[in-house]
Image (cartoon, rainbow, N blue to C red; front, side):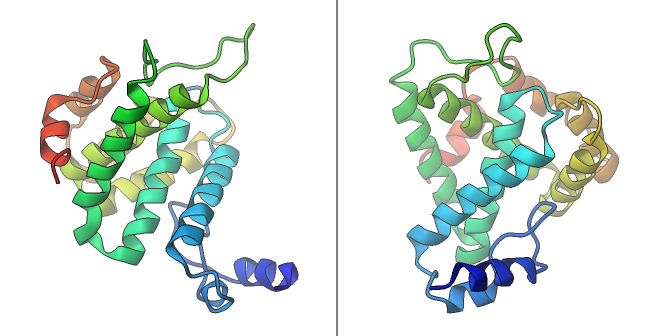
Length: 205
């Protein structure tokens, strides 16, 4: 398989990702259509894209959460929205498995101190990214996917060149949806646990 052909396929595709490109139909025709390969591609592309476009976001829970939320949207674009509950239930199970290996979880507002820029271990990173994505899922439940995606686009575009955080995202979502979502942010930012309401809604799906 020629890498140049793959690269050309990606370069000419103008699909819908939260602000950028994901996977094209020509790529699938090259034999890359297995679920495992697509999930790997989703993850690599989302991490790379949001890692590049959200460099001014100081909170790892938000940067990594945006990437994980995009990965879920990519999965649902293939499987249909009816798979959302099952997917979130699966993600919560994996989150709980990683949580059992971590004595103390970091908050979503955690960021590496300037004098110690080392990243947390894999389990901590997985938990921060998971809760960040769950926060966005909870926000989608309140304002709807279309409004949330548009707000994310504006948040990412508006954050280029200056520091942007959870408060900026809240304002973007409220401006786009016309709904107040401060209570949703409070529930997730003031605790290092998954809020009971979200867990009860999705954990047993």
